[in-house]
Amino acid sequence: MPYLDLSKMVTESCNSVSQNIDQLATLDILKVINNEDKTVALAVEKVLPYIAQAVEHIVATFAKHGRLIYIGAGTSGRLGILDASECPPTYGTSPEQVIGIIAGGASAVFKAVENIEDKPEQGQADLQSINFSNNDILVGIAASGRTPYVIGAMKYAKKQGAMVISLCCNPNAQMISLADIAITPVVGAEVITGSSRMKAGTAQKMVLNMLTTASMIKIGKVFGNLMVDVEATNAKLVERQINIVMQATDCSREQAIKALEQCKRHCKTAIIMLLMDLDACNAKLLLDRHNGKVVNVLANKNESIS
Image 1 (cartoon, rainbow, N blue to C red):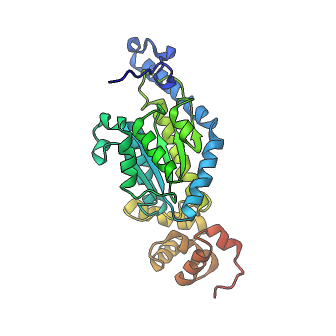
Image 2: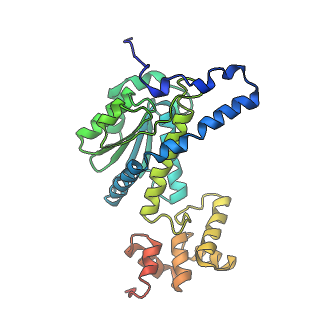
């Protein structure tokens, strides 16, 4: 196996704060971890302009019915899958709109398949298996910024003419030069040397949450701060829908339940029904006309429905 020099990677460096952590009492160990975790949000704050650029491109991709694809290995891959898997229940998206791919496939979510990350050709193959095209957008995720599997996928996506975003935690990483937009929160050395599931993983999760949350807001999946496209797939979410409609319209619980029943449990339709005194059919018509954005429907209250 060829020599791999890790000495220049910030994520592999030794943290002076935790050098004697194995000699500390339990509470003191936790204080060290907690204090280091506090620095992560500040690192993410520094890259907000790049996250904003990425969101604008993701929104544009969604507008042309393209997909947001996350790809990574190990912790990075799992974080991408976690973020993608939460979009359908939270925002009522199709499972194909945001997709997470991990090196080694589904089994790697639960059990590490470490050697796969060294195969750039597998990254390309995994994108080919979902018919990745220039209509899609790719986010390559790797704390180190040098994972061959992710780099292989990014190079393939570039050849297809797709927008490519990198998310890593090492400055001057190879992934950065391959990306159209590079998001690089530099969180510094980990509490446990090289354990990038810690601060780097936290930073990645924060960024991924921002990418999808801001994009969903921009495409109308949120009204005020309410997740108005949430799907009622369990008892808790049925109740959440009722509460959302009540909060958005200041109606009674009974009115919310009745409206939701009349529109097949679609929060946005129920909200328009109650705020504009419309039936479900006309409320849906107006939502479709305004690309599902409640705020735009309400801004044009006086327009003709026909």
